[in-house]
Image 1 (tube, helix red, strand yellow):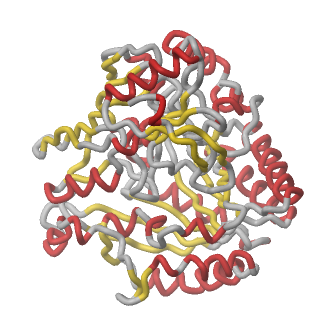
Image 2 (image 1 turned 180 degrees about the vertical axis):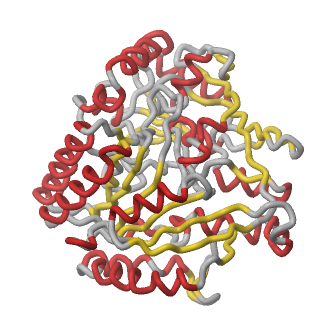
Length: 472
């Protein structure tokens, strides 16, 4: 590839609220990535690494700079159906991975809410799923990887080899090098389905208590919250628990090892294409109907609980964000941001209650709230805590004053979270300031990370709008 292969275009975060023009290159081989590094290093520029573009904010943007879009590097290089270990290029998506392995009875240990995320991006952001309390983060399933540093060095990294780079590049949001290959451990499943139950939670304290009571036995736990509820019902919602079947417990579920039966349905009632649904969601969002949709969902909760447990494919349970294609378009023209604090268990209820109440007082109630339980992990730039996270989606106004008001609200809330020992997740963040970086990770971790950055990338070749915002 040559300089003429770079194409200037608009590049946005998945939430569409932030973005800018950049020169984009789409390599298909390790040699082309190395060539791009060499070319831009010689010219004195900077590069951002981008996978599937699923980060909500500016983690894969470099306004005015150069972006390496790795989505074309999507070969599954090897898969051992006995050990359940896959070796993949960074652009392979979670969907492409499970479609290759499910027929052998293997499923990724950790998956996010959409199957469109790339494996390279999942490792760089150290994503989590609905089983973080039990299985940990995606990085914990990465046995090893090959990393190309900005200086052109190829490093083989694992828990035993180049361990300092291994524990920092996973979670390092693309600042230390480009993953060329990743070796990923999957988990054995004995059915293509999960046993799913709904539990109605009457308030925030009840939601948290359910998480504590069930996290020692459930495989997956996640709760939808009605963030419009207040008073004694503040934080009410519907918890979903899912469990894997043991050998022979679900003979009919073996049929769901067919990858075609794992995909999220593309139509409603077998007729209406789901790609047509986002305009209705747009109307609900912009006409202030979300409160009443939440009310209806809560009313339906007891009926779902009564008919629990029920059986659902892995894909249908996990990939809720894939149910309605382009659903984020419902927030056009301003787009959306997600504010997702991670708070320690000891202060969790107080902090999350405060966050929800402050949103209500400001008249800026998120249209979606998702509560999960977490555990710590060993990675240097981790967002994980022994506690909870609450992902909150805000529609962004195109009116400048309203947009600024939302940013100020989220930054005030971030101070509340950080003062309580909480953390944030860079795949979702769009609002943190430079002063927050050391508060999120601690001075020691930040110094170690910056020392690795100085060693592996002394020219600061790898940059993103997120990294510049945080002063990395």
